[in-house]
Image 1 (tube, rainbow, N blue to C red):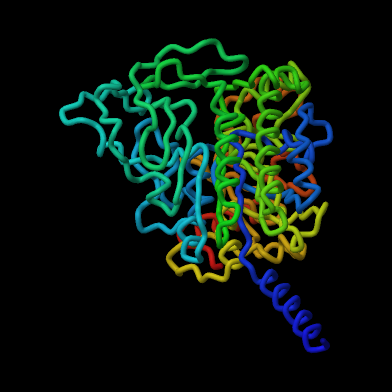
Image 2: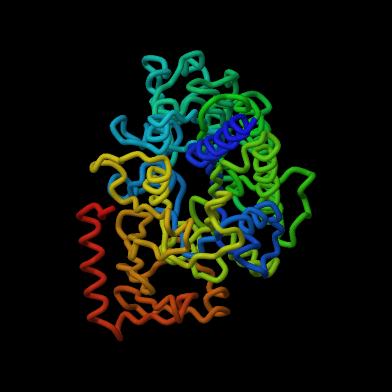
Length: 497
């Protein structure tokens, strides 16, 4: 009897040890055009309820100095998935029917995790290109509008698989609409379109707020923009349910296409915020994230799943009108919006939950970048990243789990090829006459106390001037010189992990 009891105790100990060493599931929830101050957990004065993401923040660590690589979509997604700053390769977005941004020899997070036995899936906005020439029929006349290829629906063989998408970069499964405001307006599953586009969409109904931002091109008849976000959430929930009972861990990347334009909250969410249609769309995004988080819990994965929530860049320029119309500033407490080198362009929400490893309801002010996710996940799963891959990625595991200081002291910021900035500790140096790309309304500058000083660059002390009002460029020439040299050094060489 004693031997049986001892054997049972040993079995329990071995089981506990096995669970302790079990690789965690990993889920990345990636919002589109969501400002730092749109998340209520970051901004108590936010006019937008975000209860599900706030709960996630309270269950994990909220990083208050986290950054995307770029102030626009495709480059930030590239950087997150490869651990490499986008500006080492390209700057702009992948246009409609554009080629892949990720090369076949570039290691992605999904490929890294597959090597450790992970099942991998991407559900949502890809926006990193495909090899569309594999499906475009010979002798097709291709037009151009604003850098976007314009192709008639009958000039593409929709039955063909197209490479270069998620399945070419480590994902076992993909479902999404690629880009919500780019053709083809259709659902993709894995490497081909589900339903054949038969019409050419070039007219759209009036959007509740901002610009529709829709490029002309092939579409499924009666394509419903309002149905996209709920369908993606439901598909994600379905995929999570399918993992129940399977051996080994999974990696799920959920790049939302909201609250990016077109701003299309469904009837259920209209009026749910005090920040207009955009606020309602953010609230809807929060609700979809809540569905996914609930599915993780309902299927028994919560205790062994890392959940990361962040966004690809700051809010679109319509954020200025929301200040006037609703008293809500998406970039609170920073200056700038999407595309800008100012903090509001790339200083984004960032939350990590990992039960038993990350201290709940904790806050860390260390500087981190989305390019660091790859090296950190590599450390968690025990893999060695080749020296020529993820060259800008730092292991932030001790920051996430122990609240330690970040090994990163600087980040180079860039959206377009002619202007760069560098964060170095408390300092932000902008190597251009202005950190703004989109023109700031005069009433906003007057109200906030921003002035144009005509200096060739900008220097701000973010520790004492978080909203970037006082340009110290002329007062600290030695520091400007030092930061300019450091900027060029990082641009010329990979950072050391």
